[in-house]
Image 1 (cartoon, helix red, strand yellow):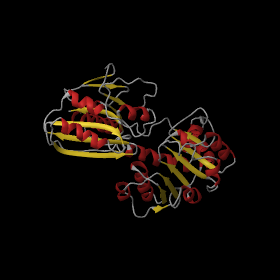
Image 2 (cartoon, rainbow, N blue to C red):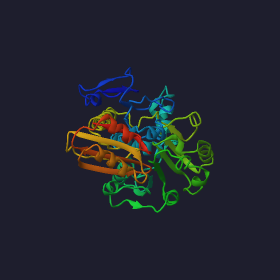
Image 3 (cartoon, rainbow, N blue to C red):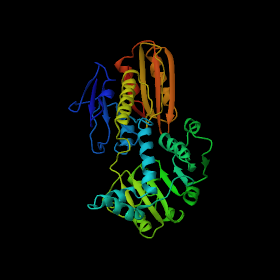
Image 4 (cartoon, rainbow, N blue to C red):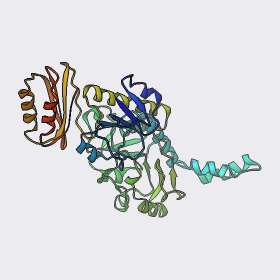
Length: 382
């Protein structure tokens, strides 16, 4: 099988792919693609392409809808880089609380009698402590939850809001974290606000004139998620009039560079050796298990399915989540004279996935028959 690399992927991750794979940037007609930040929206996908594994959490560089229509499973690696981002978030909180960056730049200008000048001028860069302040966390997933827990150990009060909080994520939260009923409650109560939600049509420009007006005077905002979450024009107005006293982001743009009160970090959140290794390993393992066994874990467009092999032949069908499709699939299998030894069917939004372990390898005609059923995106026999 062929795996195409669109970015440099850590060697420890590629080592997860054995001798069955040909891996490299120059690979053509790939069965799978591994990617980090390369933009894929204009790419044409060969019919052989079955899966894309993103070594990271965000997938806004991948055309998800087009992949779903073509039966291409898109994976990401949630949590693999969480600790790296969490540690940078702690740094961001401190950069927002204390004018460390401004002080460092000022210190570079000193040349004579430095110690005396430092004692005389350091008051211009004073700040506040995090202890006793309230941190509002928007999004309590793998990263947001870790930051919320860590902030408690720094002596902060923490409130959080996540309308889509999973049971698993909730189990990892410290009981002292206060649940906010809405984002508005965080805007009203928090001294610091940190954003940990994906960039979607619903979250784009969530920090804007309207939401900023609800915040405390002098509130500080941390954004290590995506630039699109914050309306840059509205933010600059709020910084100029003092409503927002600091903005620290991991996503520099032309609009915010050099603006007083903004610290722009060059997208370093997951750029640690450990994060890159963890993401590469997870992405490779997801790709390998899907291509060889049809199992899906951490897909953003199709449901998770993990079914142990119970026969020598497996049929994997990606299809629309509509009535009667499953009945039509099993009817073809029955007509083929195959016994279904194990089966699972799960859905995720408009997409569904059916896996059938059957008594013997299906014929090409049977696979073609299943592929012809209305609503089928892709079918393959393993």
